[in-house]
Image 1 (tube, rainbow, N blue to C red):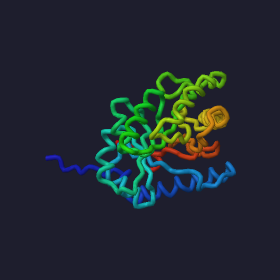
Image 2 (cartoon, rainbow, N blue to C red):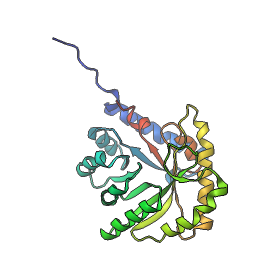
Image 3 (cartoon, rainbow, N blue to C red):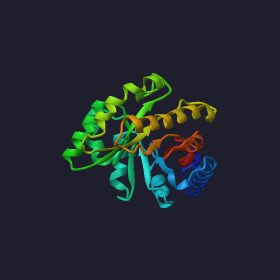
Image 4 (spheres, rainbow, N blue to C red):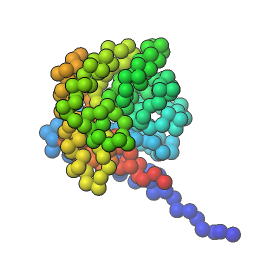
Length: 247
């Protein structure tokens, strides 16, 4: 008989989770101060993908109330069981056939990457009497593996304006800003030019697509959120730095 006892997953230790949340908040505040910003301008979106309900409940008890999920099927049981005070953000790629369920469960979608998806979200939100906030996901690195509006070449940004002008007035949608993902790297400073580009794209969108205030910049993850905050992020999407590595 095997008498060995499995070691508990340290990422589920409530005290460790509390310490990580405190650390991330402190780092966000310090980065905001370095960027001459008010820390209250930055919203922490806790990425709960792959995390058990107990960890999310503990994070909620520590004051985190906005959670990001990548996959609809994984998110639905959590949404049904957790407090209605939680705000859920869809941060993963949305397939058109799942748009209806996304509008029913997520008040904010960070990953709108096509006119077709925007129209489907609009249709279902309007039918349901909802208004959801959307962010336009932009591919600023040019990586073929990433979703998003092609925006790596600033000279081509002008091709985005006519399409985005069509998205802005769609019923059931509130166009709130932009989102991006920087390339994976061991050096977080390599993300900084991507974040600066998104900030520049935001300024250009305000000029060429009037109406929306383009308030939100969703950028920065566990390895580079400090650089993102320094460059203007209003939302940072953090998973591992809060919850620990997924098994």
